[in-house]
Length: 358
Image 1 (cartoon, rainbow, N blue to C red):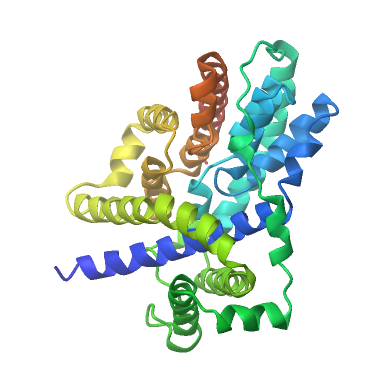
Image 2: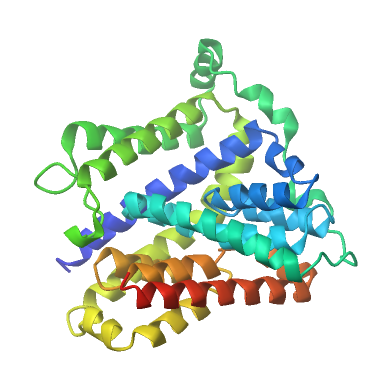
């Protein structure tokens, strides 16, 4: 029982950070009126470049936008494959919460690999025009909501005068967590945020993790103070909390719990080292699953020093969280083609990385 409490604390810390990042991305998506999707219509190279940028957006919003534009015959297969290679789905939130320096490196590499792959794919595969349209619900943006993002004193005061229970709870959670980090520590003996027992080989500085948390929580708290009740109800409560909170918390907790007990009996580093190519194949196959939860295993194995960077990168290339679900629902052919491209690129990059000792 003594071992469970640190795991619970780590799970809650990671979940809070992930949900805060989701709040920021949701806010920016509404604030920009989803404008990024409208810039993919002119030329192939612009489609590929901007699709890679869409893929870099943490979470599934960028991937959803790319899929919707593909279904509406706005972008081609090459651009869609580019977005799906560049995206890591909700895994990106976990990466930035646990190993932020590595997350930045992976994002840069995914962006470059995605663009190169997109141009190669464009040579061989052209867009299939006989695609069934979605309708706009997959990339719906409530443009009338932008008026609520004013950042003026009157809006903040009005929000406090008519304080809802949901806003009050969220302010207490975010504000309390921020205060704990700033004034109490709530972490290890050196005052650093303790997420995992990350070895020096991963090159993560605890101070960076601490300041990353402070920045994200501060921005989230500011947004929480300015948004209107509609945003709270439709975007935070209905989307972030109801659709993601429990799933993220449970996946995080049970993954950490499983690895904690398995590590007592198995030497993961030796097992992976002796079966490196089998592990690569497993990582790539797991990447096919349209769910971010299973991929958390590879992030934690890497963070603990048991998994090579090349395999984590290969897994990130293939997996796209929930981004491919709407694609699967509308065009199995498109889904199979994109996943086949992702798998090929992931295996190739993984093999090259292993051969190079990365």
